[in-house]
Amino acid sequence: MQHITEPDLETETETDAARLRAAFERDLGDPARWFPPPGYPDSLALCIIDAIYSSGARHSMTEKVIGRYREHRRALGGDPDRDGAVELLGTFADVGGAQQWASQIGNRRPTSTAPDAPLRAAAVADASEALVAMGISTAGDLRSAAGAEQLEPVRTAWCGVPGQRSGVTWSNLLKLAGLPASAAGRLVVGYVTRELGPASPERVADLIREVADLAGWDAGRLDHAIWRHEAGLQCQQAG
Image (cartoon, rainbow, N blue to C red; front, side):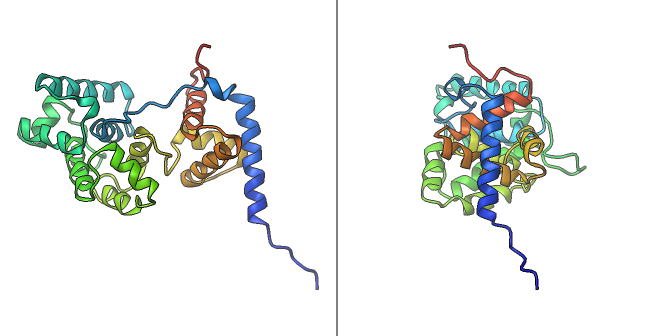
């Protein structure tokens, strides 16, 4: 009887990582000159707003919401770039609820195209409440939970908010807070798929972290460099 050798998954993974590293070195240039990824390492409030409002939308629209939030907080003597989830929830009380927040600070975009989909403003409030209930009030709290490998229940709480089940905005939140994404974005998945064949967003995120670890690169900068390459933007800062 002919012996059938099972595929060595560890060797296959190493081969995929090596192929990707070669592609990154070919396409992305000097890692020391990659742009830092966008984010708000000291403001969980801004991370939450950006994560929810940027999903499936032009980022210029999200920037306008962020700008109005900053104006609101500064007018009250606050520091939006250091706000946590509690301060963000306070702005809903300031204006009288999610409907008013959508009109005055956010916009009236819903979380999906479903007829009864809640406003993204409501999702911002609900997600903030979910994080506070899990003991996550600041971006530092989120990073500490990641370091202690205690993010899964926090993820479950976030994805339980209406309109957030897919996990896309959760992955956005992690990146904006300075953590590795749990799933890669559409453009990054497209790049890896061209190089290796079809792969899930979660698999792509794992491979990017693996290549970064092996090469001594920053995984967040690598992910952002791939995104910029796919978006037709410069990958290298002037140096």
